[in-house]
Length: 373
Image 1 (cartoon, rainbow, N blue to C red):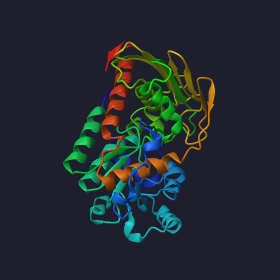
Image 2: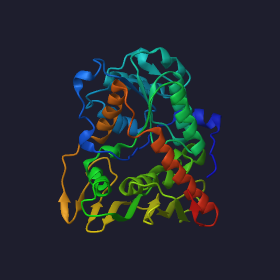
Image 3: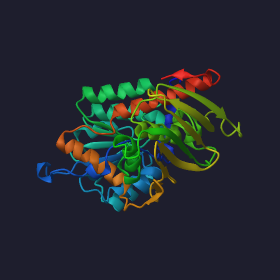
Image 4: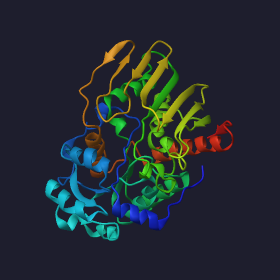
């Protein structure tokens, strides 16, 4: 996949004049262990989080979730829309000194109220603001996809290491007990070896002028936005990294999807000979994860929503009192900061996903040939 750059002028206009929203998703580790920490070892001061970009995801998911978190809180905002400053300041009691824009963002380095930057911008801006945050000495959560190229992912990881800050990717589903059950099918093998994975995620996209349909902002279409969830699902249910794949692309509206992909299917191969099949789309709704083992089958449908997940395992209904995914995700990273531990959804996890996405685009560009990862 080609590295997709961003026109600086159009990008600046976008972040100053448009609403910004991104959804995030996740990978692997036992839900029950997330908050199982000796609280006596924690520092008394909760790390403050600043949201960079106040679009749909920040407005409707992250900010409300920060009202539920136990180990961090909403301390600041970064926005290019002046009108939002007063609204957010009043609603979340944010002091004026903790409100920034994209021109004075670097000055956040001197603000001790803010320990963590959450980058919630269009995909092509993730690398730029993650690196700026790292240079400002702030820990970073970056929404998925981590970036728009493997090179950018490596640059982000290096910047965080060079500045001794932690980096995590916004993979909220890591903290879902429903997905933990699917992860454990391979991890504990209660029904034998995982033999096959099928995963689909898509929705019918609306506004044809939105940033997700612009290549210089999104880097790609449905694959970058929601197909990445399918990549993660296969990785964490198999517990292996794919070694090769073959992809196919389909378009029904070449005008609307002139710049980005509409529907992609792909098949991944794993070191033990297992395979997985996936579909992602901006033209129809689909949302499931099916994991077959030697003796049973696990199904999540819907599998990737913010809430309301449903599923079954070995013909028994799964029924969990699921937490707010974003709240637990952010609390987990706050504990990483307080305990000086590494995130289980690190930059390296985002890099592994990006390697797969690049291979998908490479297969498409080669005429649907098999591509090694």
